[in-house]
Image (cartoon, rainbow, N blue to C red; front, side):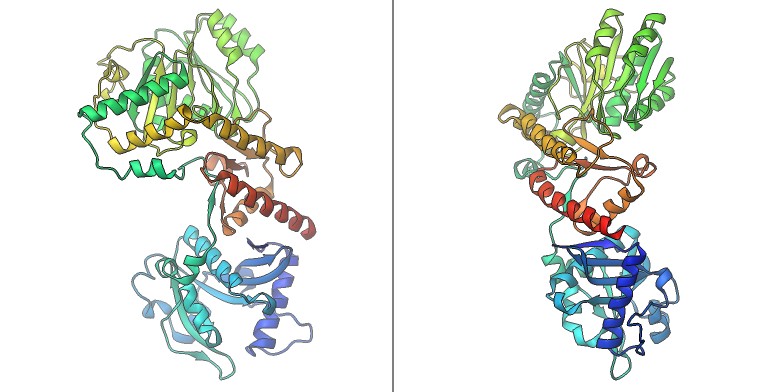
Length: 523
């Protein structure tokens, strides 16, 4: 298999120097011969190299550099004077040393290189890349999207044409049409199934219309069937908004509370509670480790708490916090248990029948657009004029539609929920999760916590983990690792909620095994 990565090791740099010599000394006589058969680029320490490998062997390379002056600046003057406004809309970089070994010059490697270059340059904020393209391969460069912006430079034996590539040019190119499919392992946004996506293109209807009220009632009934809660309130916003509305209700309670946290989203609940001025204690545990139920039991016995607030599915670690024991303790002490189920709701079946308040969202496991969130309750919520109106769940009760909603987003949610009614989406997600666990059992991967659930897993943090994720991106696999709480810990996550997961997982698993073997050989 062909695949891409960023060169980082001395062994890789040694192979690059050999390919550099083969291409730009022996094949294209641009430099003087050297008896060692290697050529280290003068800008080596400033270059970022993207390489293509055939299994374990170097097949091609390209170097990216953004330090001025560019080598082209020295040949044609400041390149800005010759480039279009589109090319100058952001940072510039220079591409050099585009080389592919002769036995791999089938077009595929060139296209993989330029596709990886486009992906890398876009994420680094470059608006355009300039290159001295050999006149021997003008047709190939044009297929990649490059366009000439100056006259030919160089010697009679080694002539080059100054060319530029922008994101827009690449997207119109032959290379873009032939580029490999990208696979997402993000926990959101979700790639939409056809029937769910078409709902977003339907003619909108008023949120005051009869048709809208019928759809809203269907959605509510399906959510109540899934949750076993008595009431559900639909809000126009993200899971954070739903949690704000939940905490606003907690604010109305007279007593002190306890917040449990063992991850980024538990910490966010603490932050939100502080902003609301709640009076509470906090039990904070190591990320990815379970709550100490004995400690919690003692805490609840010692102090007179009114409520407990916690995250059910902690996205930041991929951990499911088991609620059964805490629910039992809260029942014994007549404490109201409130849950953030933003990531867990829809990923596995569980009951909210004895929970005071809980939240969920339309995105993530349910599989449609983000934009709608839910607050479940088992008591009727009355209006409270002391709360911000948008967060007052009493305004949403009794079938009220207090504010504007998108009928298309609601319709897409209805279609997504149908997969829980007409098919067993829980089984689909469970089977996917078991595939991932098989990879751990086979020692292909190691996960942060054994207390996972069918939504997302976190690979154990190692220095090389984020490098792997960056390299996977160049090969067409988008892993979740850019969030601050992940990058700080060198954690990488794989979500299983995308509709093409089975295909994506099969290809990624093969890529990852090859990658591991390559890393082992690199030492």
